Image (cartoon, rainbow, N blue to C red; front, side, top):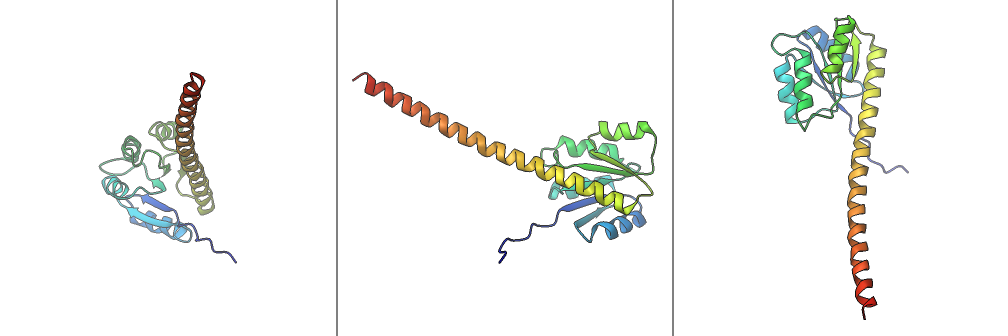
Length: 166
C-alpha cells in the first residue's frame, strides 16, 4: 500500500500581453501544472513577489516592462533569484537569444511554439530546479552537521587536554 502523499503540482507563471497566447499556453500546461497568468511585466512581478512560482514562461515583447527587464528584476530579488525563466517569443535572431540569456533566462522557445517542445523544455527546467533545490537543502543540512561535529570535536579535544594534564 502506497501511503506517500503526491507531490504538489509545480506552479508556472505565464506572462504574455496577448490573451490568445495566454489561453493557448494555459491549455497546454494546465493538464500537468498549476498555471498563473499575467498580461504584463508589472503584474508578473506582483504575482511572483506574492508567491514565487517554480518556473516563469515569459514573452519578450510587451508594453511597459519587456521580458528582459522582468527577468532581470526577478533575478535581482532573493525570493525569485533561483526561479528559472523560459523565454517564449516570436523574436528569432541570435542577438535576441543572447539578450535572453544575458538577462538571466534559462531557455528560449520560438513562437509559434510546438506544444510538445514547450512541455519538454518546461519539464527539463523544473527537473533542474528541483535538483538544485535539493542540493541547496542537502548542503545546508551538511553544513549544520559539520559545525555540530566541529563543536563536539573541540569539546572532546578540550576534555582530553584536561585529562592529560592531570
